[in-house]
Image (cartoon, rainbow, N blue to C red; front, side, top):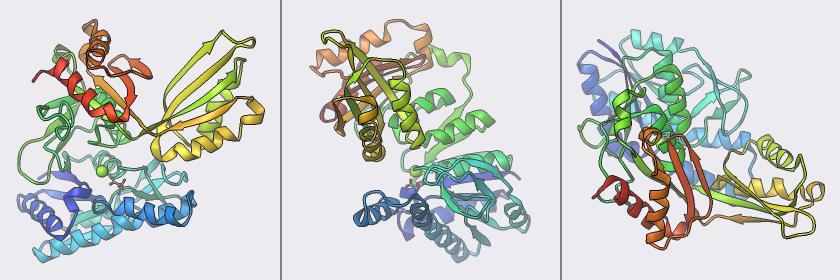
Length: 406
Ligand code: ASP
Ligand code: MG
């Protein structure tokens, strides 16, 4: 007998029939004698729709109230999933994040898990019940409902697997596993059998949309091996685990395109010490994550000036622009430009460490297709560029072809 944590994403619970399918799968595992903890997301589209309604009322709604609102999405799914299991005569109980013992800090909309006390989960499992936990949510010590950032149900699942020392952690989604690229954009993308945490982290963080990156970081930290697989069939998925030496034989594991970033450019910033520090401290204090940063001094003016560009998640763009506008007098820049129409294309692979010329090949490939590169950034196992959003998918296809073949 083993303890399994299974997470089902929004598309896997998109309607009552899909929820009944999930229940069948859960019932089959339980029939084999396993204890099953199920983590579910909101039904697909529900979270987006709740956000849309709130923003229809005001552009920057209060974050505590947003958490209160968004937590209802997952709460609907846990109850429906429990009911679907009851219909199959399987004893099941649904728990909110708070009831499951998930304690977080108080940063609304992107709370961090501080500790998990799965007492209630344990006792329900001991009673032979399937436990269904609402993903994406937790509670502060003071009893405030929080959410863990978009895609946070993945984190709930990985954290529960670590805390319960589960024998198996399965992340069910609407794709068969992790691919060399999004198969909807690159038709000849291939499913990977395995991938290292670091590669997965880069791919998830870069918008491969398979999993929330914080959940992969958490898995790496606590050594939670997990499988990403489809809830629509029985095919084996992709195993995500610690790097092994043979993984370096492959130069590029995958190509990803992130359409969810936006660029902020602060134009003509005086070139003096402390300016960048002030800008990025203010952004950080607003709890906005910055990804790429580019600065380039122009020496053609009497006073040296610089443009500073950086990228943030698209939903944070308005907030970020406001924060920077607020610094105008103090810093003395000319203007702030917000650009939503960018795509960030990245190639990822631990093999890059031992194979030179990878960046050059990527740039040549893009040039040959007449695609202009805007920002560039690199790390040990990744090269990223931003391009015009309209060219993003084409860029992804040509780069995939160059590195991963037809
Ligand atoms: N429902 C939340 C979202 O859409 C959390 C999740 O699906 O993991 O971001
Ligand atoms: Mg998700």
